[in-house]
Image (cartoon, rainbow, N blue to C red; front, side):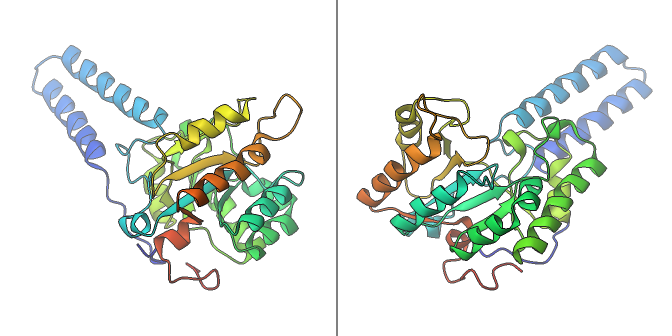
Length: 280
């Protein structure tokens, strides 16, 4: 699937359409004298469903959400390793060395503010043959309850910082902690960004046991999976070493042993594209 550079009009998901119909039906029912308790109850139930969908990172109820690679990528035995919350000046260079040693590519979902703070490191990620995508500007904890204008500014600012710093424009977006609201999808559509979650994650920001993190990533591992690790906000082992540095070499060994190839999301989407000229 090649990512188009043309902005697409927003198309609400079936769940959002159903929500709009329910709200209109409730208002019409009240206007027709059918009573407000059922209307309020229905609206509250609807909002509860939408809230739960926003708290479920892999949900598609609120809009398009890439959770696995495309069929051609699966056929090619591709796996996408995605690395969030960087770049980090202490950890990211070591991650890059590990990837280089294995001949692997990764996708770095970077925080715009961190790219501003470490522009040379961001450019080094690109120089090493990887891709940087949008993970918001400041990774705010209240991202999922931001208003429409706040969301647009937060994501647009990161988009601008990453583009100006690296010369490459993000085409994918990952929400902070994977949490979002119904307002996110139209903003991403307007910025021509595709939401990406993951197939499996290691919970390496909160764990201390690298073995358990690796086990979570490898259990049920299949071609086309999107895996999640962190170079920023990284969890540490008992000895004080970032978990990603312990887990990544072993994970790459497993991929190689099973015949998988670690590629970036963009290469998985369009194997004929090189880093130059991709989705500019």
